[in-house]
Length: 260
Image (cartoon, rainbow, N blue to C red; front, side, top):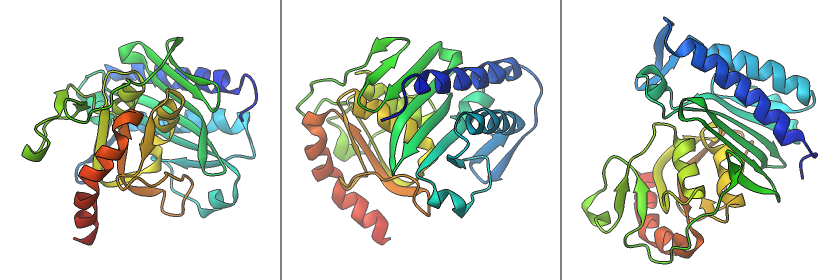
């Protein structure tokens, strides 16, 4: 259980980073690709430095894992670790679209205990604390009571024919914000069948759990954070009443993808 008041301090730091991102949004800044299809800009690096400075001052003993910092195996020895994506949804940031967020999680013994998403272009601040619930702009979050997979809303650009019984809803580029849509009851389901990074999802995982949802890997196994690879294969986020059905539908596709 995190210390009383710690989540508010983390949210204030994330908001500071969000304000910096907003002041730089309409200015000229450098942008490039780390690898093909993975954009980054110098604002990412500015926010990363700010967040590391502020969060390390808050908990000097905590380890550090961020998309924009070279990884160090020293974090594996830390009981607590900051897991950060300075700008989750960089494509939307670069295109002047609002679907990006600053994502900050405090992970303790492999599980997120504080999760914050600051999405200033959308006027949203999401905060979750282990055992204390989740909220957006001060309003408590609850997943939907849905118990039928057919008709479930999913934030995506397209669906394969086999999933034609699902309903597409608009999605932000930030996967953390897509996960948060399930926490807020604005979507019922989110699934990926690919390798993903811990920093993309750590904060949003806690939002869903504290809102009463279920989030696992795509095979239905528990997500664990601060692993050596800092990756997991596939993600399945849903209202509890449809999670088993979603695992049943997707597990064989995930196994085929892993084998290939």
